[in-house]
Length: 139
Image (cartoon, rainbow, N blue to C red; front, side, top):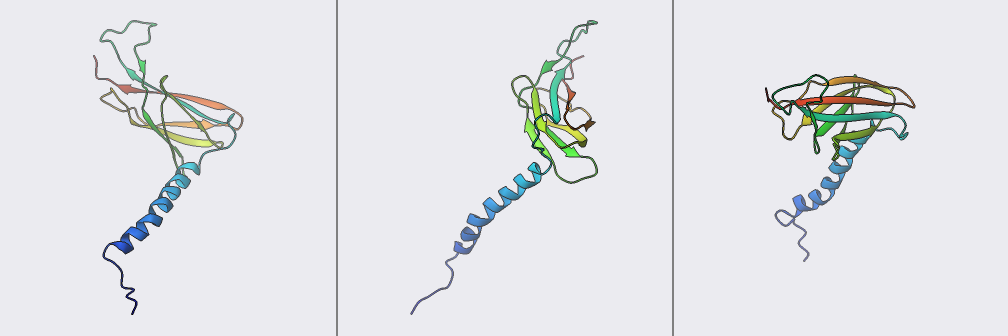
């Protein structure tokens, strides 16, 4: 006689084998849903932290690039998002469809405070640049 009763945990393991990749693809689909295919249209986000010195001098930049900052871009009034991390120069580039986007720094290594969300318009055939400065607390 054949016993087809489930082995404890086998069903969960079998489902996990299929559910994990499906959830990963669904998350990727949500994140990628706002990404455009035209590299000439999009958003270049620079993340800096500052001040880096307690005394500011007119005309001198008192900020520094933040490698590894995490940035989230969401279309205003629509669903979807794209997340990225800044490179060694503190910049992350998103190819996006034309529209209005909320740009948020969600993690800023070496800073005490995150900048407010910025709203930026992306136009077809143009790259829009945004700079967000995280607060170091140095005064």
